[in-house]
Length: 311
Image (cartoon, rainbow, N blue to C red; front, side, top):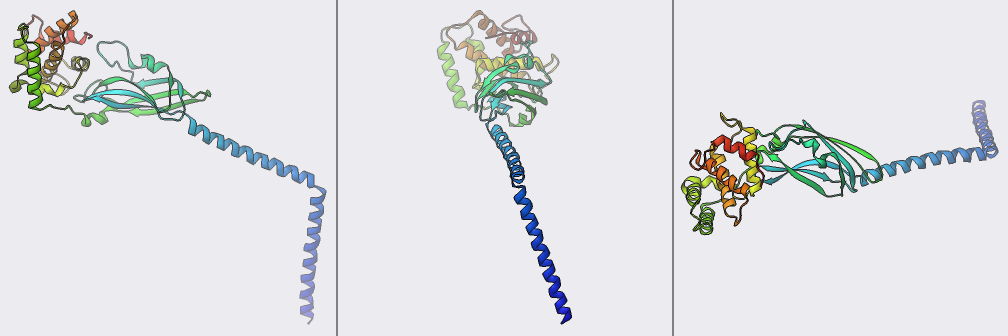
């Protein structure tokens, strides 16, 4: 019994101590209520400010512009460089730098980083893009067939600055390039159309007919869907990346001849010609026939002169 009494006494003492501690705590709270409310208020404000900053940052990320560089096929092995804004707001003051800084065309001394569109594209709306001709992948050894490190800097309308870095390697697309080849039916129709338009002119009919006969010139129709400007660009790229001893790409003289056939065909279908176009026809005759039958200009002299021409 004494042991039970002792245990009851101990429980009672502990309960009494807890009660007294709670009373002391309530007295402290009651006496310091203002201070406790102030601390709680400060902690609440800190939490609210943090949540506001997080929400603002998330909203800014959702609304910001996002500018990047892409490549898209123009036709066949010819590709455009595309500046895209895939964000949800406009990008302004866009500046793009390529490394290495290359000269895209042999007929122009301007390098890609010197283009005005690369130095300061003032505005690009969300979901929109700007593009220009980048080059050819034909043969896999052209000037654009290399890895580029690209740095893109731009601002949004609120003045926030952004900087993206990416790697662009056109060689990834070399195996995807192709040139469509028309069938014999389309070839015959083209021949008939040309002969009808040129009937009676006489001066260049023999060269035209020799150049586009189905039996010997069928491959030329690979390039039939290209414009005169694109065909001329192909010849310029061949001249830039080739050597007098043999082309460093997969293109040979037959390819040059095929391109020249179609380009000459398209030029001669025009009702009126400029002196520059007439001279280009003479040079194309040299490339088509691989000798000096129609001109005293040699094969490579003709190719070099074409590289400096503009339509």
